[in-house]
Image 1 (spheres, helix red, strand yellow):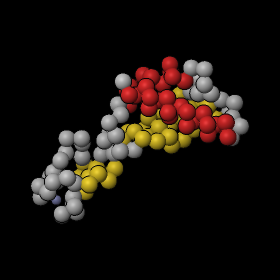
Image 2 (cartoon, protein in one colour; image 1 turned 120 degrees about the vertical axis):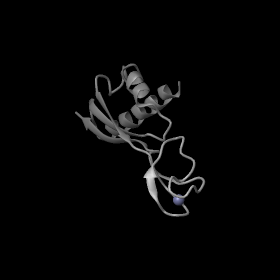
Image 3 (cartoon, helix red, strand yellow; image 1 turned 90 degrees about the vertical axis):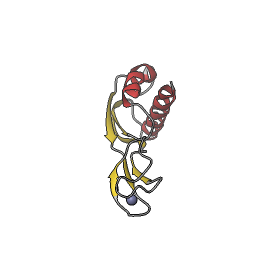
Image 4 (cartoon, helix red, strand yellow; image 1 turned 135 degrees about the vertical axis):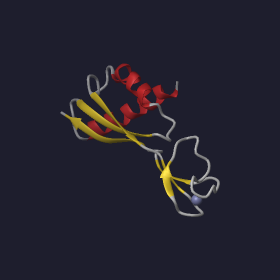
Amino acid sequence: MHEVAITQSIIDICEETARHQGAMAVRGVTVEIGELSGVVPEAVEFCFEACSRGTLLEGATLAIRRIPGRGRCNACMEEFPMDSQTFTCPACGEFAPRRISGEELSVKEMEID
Ligand SMILES: [Zn+2]
């Protein structure tokens, strides 16, 4: 399950940032996960408690913001909602629309002590 590795790296990033700021503990973290990122938010939530044990993030609350997938057609410039099964433009049928959002995976906010 690669979400364990992803959760681990989220925690690493937060810990490093918190240390730099001289924090004693991290109270809360907000993470953005795009619907096209291939990361399952529920799995990250599930891993978070176990992965954060013994780190500055132990006991921190995890908030996950889901970013909907959106695409733009290279031919007709139409914008539309997109999931991982969208391979053509719904307006003109052009292949391989560009993904303009939904691939995010980043730490957005952190509350430290
Ligand atoms: Zn199109």
